[in-house]
Image (cartoon, rainbow, N blue to C red; front, top):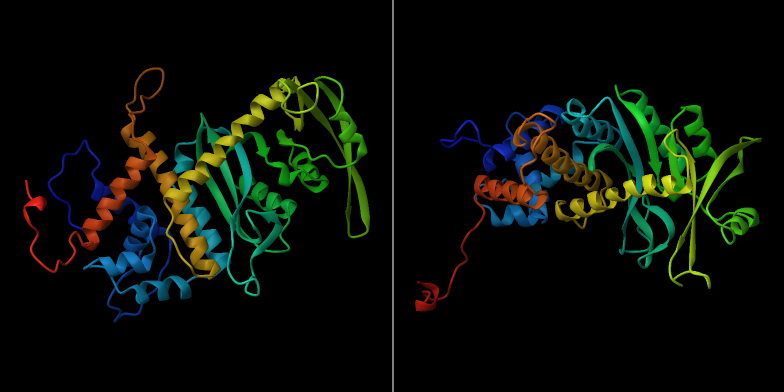
Length: 388
């Protein structure tokens, strides 16, 4: 894309699009025939534009004069990747620049995200089935690994979930990824789906500090969470694998708060956390530190604002859209910190630059690059009401 006259101390919309397209082009090998009418950058431009626009690839191509034909773009997206390769490429893509701005020690969070599937009940092969949620038991499901730094969240890895995947298999993979990165892990924050004996065994084997809410399994823990005040107890779970069984023991921090009658008749809410970390000395500490991970939900809300829509059941295409959506957030945070923030003594000054503004800039750049339609045909000339 040609650049207009631009000052050296500003980042313009077209440069944001260039940065994203170049990032994809450097990591995603998209081989096209020598006589192909389009190149990889054309496809990435449409892909980024559709995610920033929150529309489908087909819709964006139809509205654009300079875009490739929708069928050509979708054909290459469906046929040029396999899931395993795309997951590896996606993780490399997500980690590419942010590893340079992360501190030596970070807090990490792992989460499972379920996107409901409302299609044909007989066409759910390859989907992830779980307990009913929002009217369905079938989901397009993804697990994500984040680094949390001063309330900013950077995605380190994402993988698609299928039936047969377990919380412990996902956690084992994510801990393996962390072992391969030059990062110190201050603590691992997990949601309640990871509360089981195998996950706790993995965390202890890797010697990671951790915090996660417990699930009320068994009469013992139900009784502990129905009476008494804030305290720390020892609890255990039994695991079985290939005919072998073992018991994992861990501390549970039970935090009690007065909720003015919202819960039981005494108005006391009791929450239990499996936690083993040097900076957690009390149940209140466990609740305070675990509350940090709720920013992950904000990341998913941002993702919903910046993902291409599709009706396809092709798992590769859907994962690719998720990767690009998460990449947009990583790039925004990276550029905000590395290029937009002003270095100064005591820490950088972060200029106000919201994700929504960033996405709007990328969207406008894609519209310009693809020559998106800015007018519609009229059956008669506009009258005076259209002028001023």
